[in-house]
Image (tube, rainbow, N blue to C red; front, top):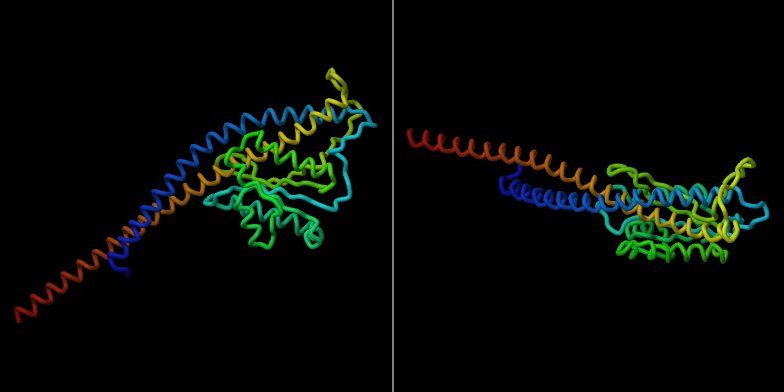
Length: 291
């Protein structure tokens, strides 16, 4: 059995750890509230804009060409991996990388072998984990979390759209954690480009008045819809990260409390054993003196 000094040292160490994890839990809870408010307020706007765009696409003229929706033979692929800059959030980052590896293995193994697939990292942790598996990201935008405003995120989505139009990439995928609630996140893989057109409904009629015309409106709304989708992805990931970290730190705090209970029990047993030994030594010495 460990001596009393060793157990006391471990108890103090676990107490310090519990204080840290408890503080991190409270900080994450506060950040989660703000991030959750942002994504909850932004989702209706993004969904409504997306609904308008899809309705317009469903009723557009057959001869209208949408450059961002043109499907080409998939020679070059870009995967945008959205993770976090910081760790201590459970399997938040590893689940994203695991899904990336699965998709690459099942669908794009030949692209990887021939270097026809690029990876863009948004988040240091994802970039680091990918590097450990032998995948090097061709670009990274980890600094976006310093100020994740729409205008800052728009710079990234603008570059991706430009690369697609210039035929640098034939397909762009987003891999990220969707925020469900404080204790649940879901890894999503979404096709960013080319834009997937809805199935034509011959009975669908447009109830919009176009000014100047339908084609101009659609061509202006599609990039805006894509940028909104990209920004929603970042907001989802931020909220999911804080939720995952809060949950992880809550579990760590509970585990530290359980460990403290076990250590205190071990300490009391060791202390009781030491006292018993001292009593036995005193009694034995007294008996020896009385003889």
